[in-house]
Amino acid sequence: MRDSTIQKSAATIRDPRIRIRMRVRSAAWFAVLVFVNLPVLAFAQPPCSGIHMKILNIKNSTGTIACALFESPEGFPKDYLHFATNIVSIRIRESQASCHFTDIPPGNYAIAVVHDENMNGILDTNWMGVPREGFGFSNNAKALLSAPSFSAASFQYDGQSIDMALKLNY
Image (cartoon, rainbow, N blue to C red; front, side, top):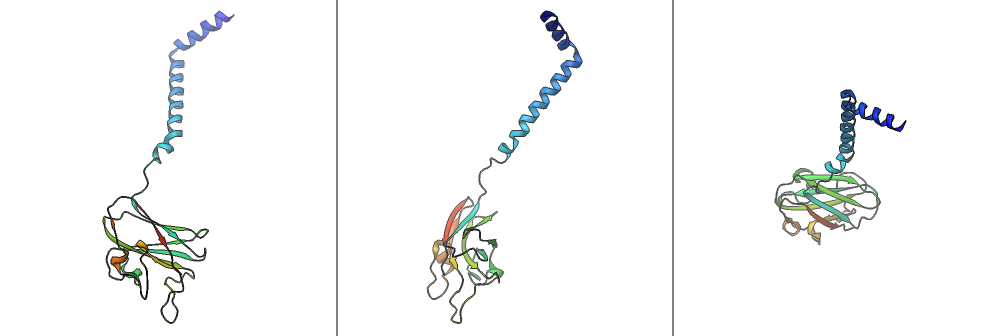
């Protein structure tokens, strides 16, 4: 009985219709294996080039963080809505935030950051002009009696990925 089963199997394989079905099945399994591994291949790209800023020392998770990228001293840092090259506004999650600027050409830049707790779009100050919300600048440039100059906060960007950290002041 075993010999007759082997003979039938051999005869079946010689049948052209059976061979075509086997090839189709093999091709289908190959396609499934390729597509299962496709996400690994497609998403295994290097990180995006750009300026990546991690914001440190966030007092609380209330409001948003606004990051403004400037390419010139004009309007830096107070008038960021009109003069910043790029602006990123993000919600704070568990007292943490990061700003990412992509597709930025090489050049000299400075970043100003505001913790806009009441989400009114401006850095709130008291009657003397002292900020009531968190703020910070690239290079952790210090604000003594006024905001630092563009040159104090500026840095050279070469077009590659750059990771920075900025500490907020309250």
